[in-house]
Length: 140
Image (cartoon, rainbow, N blue to C red; front, top):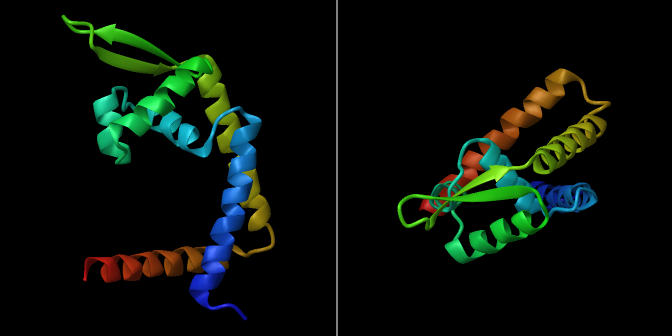
């Protein structure tokens, strides 16, 4: 039997593979999907996105440019010098996020299909406790 952390790592790898397949079917990467989600949550400038997602500006710029090129985002220059850009998720981007979210929810439902609700709740509690324990070791 695997140790708890080894099992968790293996599960995370499997989940990542599935998430990559789901996002690829919509023509975006996992990082782009996460970025679209933040944009839909109201973080519509590069500065807000960089702070919220803790990304450096060059990585963020590449991702934003890619999403604009794919038609998932539009951008508008504002301000007196027209250097500030406001990003807006296009209907194509909204549809992609919706489809990815639905596919991921379906995947999660399939994973936990045979689990009673009390066991799902217990797992959530234990994983949150594990997360806090790991956080404590990083602070020390």
